[in-house]
Amino acid sequence: MALHIDYYASLNSPWTHLGAARIEALAAQHGAGLRIFPVDFGTIFAGSGGLPLPKRSPQRQAYRLQELARWREALGIPIAIQPKHFPHNELPTAACVIAVRETIGDAPAIRLAHRVLKALWEEEKDPADPATLAALIRDCGLDAEKVMALGAEPRWPERRMADTQAALARGVFGAPSYVIGDDIFWGQDRLDFVARRLARG
Image (cartoon, rainbow, N blue to C red; front, side, top):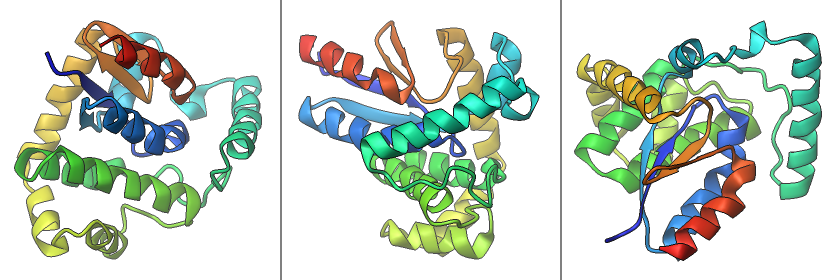
């Protein structure tokens, strides 16, 4: 049976961005399918005992910034620690990613999600701005006018909420989460364990 990874991502998460290239590479290395779900982590936090960033204690918020700086140096990924447009309104970008996933395919959907994250965390761009989002879609080799019109359809936010409830039911509580069968791996710092799981087949 072919290996498959369900990839639960936040399009605002620096941790999702820091793991983006590596999860793609691992899937390719092991011949595993990779399907992205840009779910609503506000709903997931509320349903799993987590807190959104602004509601976390000052100590936890300060530690997060230290960790981002450490991982930026360790991975050589030039993120802005406190980007201008964080958090952006994820709904338009998530709707477009889901629309691409469902009508074009998994690979272009992942490409678009990762382009959105790079724009936010490395390029100080606002992916929710329509002109910016159109440019990011074009960067992925997709028809921006077509994808944005498709993404505006109400079925995609509805699908996102269904995906979010399914994620909660599977035990997902944080971003990014990589799920292989019954095994959940939370965080880009768990990608070594993802690699071991994929190697087992």
